[in-house]
Image (cartoon, rainbow, N blue to C red):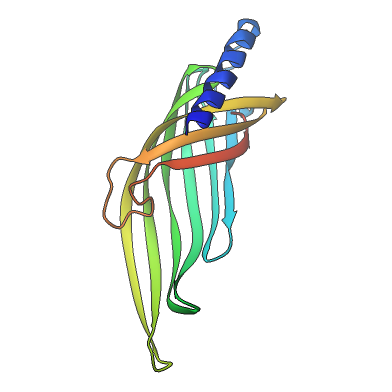
Length: 193
């Protein structure tokens, strides 16, 4: 965690030194400006005893140099296995579909404060393997609200394309939240950051 914070502050310092040359467009357009669209999201994959595939696109609009907002979609599939010695005793599979809105405030051109209320629909199948080669499967469906709050850093890598990292936390902490009372680390790429 210390290394992540040191890297964050180092990148922020480099960007602040470079920010002296940051120029805003002096031509202001009235109405919708396609160059202010924000397209991005994140893609994550983990495989093994714990499997998770996460596809979370987002789209938004940069209303000014300081404010951006938009909508996001969440789609996740996951499973994990519980082992006892050399055999599986339980396997849980889940799918999460949902979305919400997000907003960002940029106090500096590359640093943002992020707020994201969302609602996710979760389907979970738990299969318990019994001693006599039998199994029992339990299925649950539910919806759960979340309010992700945090901060992040974006770095332009050329033109309007950038990469971003953010650290978020679900402040509602519903017992069934997919975020499990832990910090959420996201790395993504996008256009119009």
